[in-house]
Amino acid sequence: MRRSNTLDKSIKLADAFYLAFMAAGENTLLPEIYRAIGYEATIKLIEMFSGSAIQIPDVSVIRMAVRDATIFIEGKSGSSYEVLAEKHGLTTQQVRSVLLRMKGLHRRV
Image (cartoon, rainbow, N blue to C red):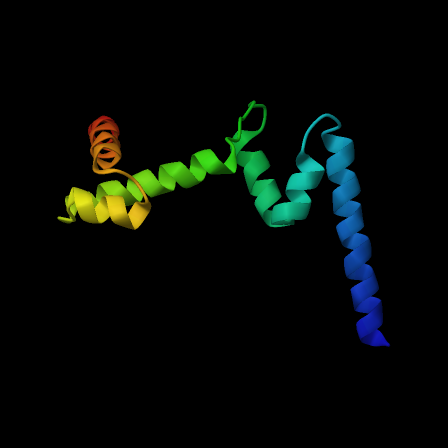
């Protein structure tokens, strides 16, 4: 019985956080962000970016960026264009293009 009460309180608290985020940011994605990443991470996100307009790219853009960074690191470690192309489902010319672009980004960092 005690465990059930704790679960009920937990559910009510989660609903309260959801409603609070809805009220605090009427035209924002705060409630959805809270449901996806939880209270602490949502608060941290708010603290970091409060008052800013942030844009979140499509997941395919992020996956491609991670792939390109991986190709860059593997290329710097000595993997050949051919090996990288086969591993990542690209042509050797595409691998060369990725490496050149990532090299330029790396210089700016």
